[in-house]
Image (cartoon, rainbow, N blue to C red; front, side):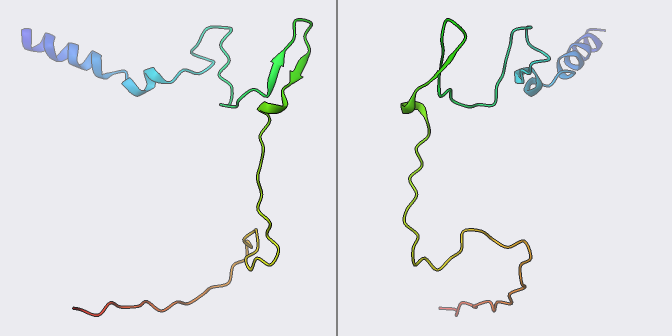
Length: 92
């Protein structure tokens, strides 16, 4: 009988995965929970309901000068087959 009790407790513990307990979505959370999309805010809300954008919080993209660059920025969806020969290493 004690062995059956121990296996029953073990089965009860295994029913719920521990990884699913860590996942918190808006359906499993309180009513006012908002998960968001992992984005940083670019400003703040004012008391009167407005929104002020802070220029220091906006993303700043630094793009290098690509004049005379051989490669194109995008890859075509219709790629041509390129046959390559494998280089075999010589034994030492």
